[in-house]
Each structure stands twice: as structure tokens, then as C-alpha cells.
Image (cartoon, rainbow, N blue to C red):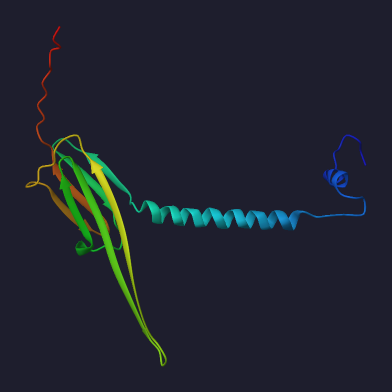
Length: 156
């Protein structure tokens, strides 16, 4: 063996007795699988904890649009609440499953809730704001209000 090249197996022999020839590849594969499992599980858990959904704000000259992705939700599953300069979008889907066998009747109900609050730089006009739902995309149309500004002098 060339003295310039390093043999990784020689490091093992420093720790273990000479007659032990241990291959760590299966252990490393096991550790990689465990890391992958926990990584996927955490992402799923994180999605359940955060329970939000993609939304974006699009500003045009006279309107602001809030566009939210809500695939699988129907109009009756969506509640939009306006509070001052905030819009609260709440999604709630209830699903029931019934299974009847010769020995058991199983009924299962699940509720999935998601919520998103979007803040705008002005109070939202309640009478002229509208919303549409099409192909899993919720669009809330908010007309811009004329905002008057006033500069305040600082007293000495």
C-alpha cells in the first residue's frame, strides 16, 4: 500500500482490537433512515401545529386582492371575518366515515381547522369588500380607501 494514501480502515483498528473487522455501513444506513423518518414526521407535525395555508396580497391601483389557496374546501367551509385592518380567514372541514361490518359499526369523524390573519395598512371597508371561490382559490377584493395624511409639528 502506498504511504501517501490513507486507508480509512486503519482508523478502526486503532479503536478496536486487530481481529475485529467492523463494517459500519449498515449502521450508517440505519441512522440515515432514522434521520429521514424523523425529518418527515417533524414536517408533518409542524404542518399540523401551524395550520396555515398559502396566501398572497396583490396590490393594484384601486384594489387590493388577497389570494388564498384553499383546495378541497367549499364555500360553507370558509369563514371570512374583518376586524379593523385585519382579515381573518378560517377554514373548517368536517369529514365523517361510517363502516358497517357483520360484527361492528364504526363511525369516525375528523375536523380539520386552519386559520390565517392578514393585516392591511388601512381599515377594511365592510360594505364594498367581496370574495369569490373558484377551483380552490379564494380571492378577496378590497377597494382601496383614500388615506389622508397629516404632518404634525413638534412643539418646542
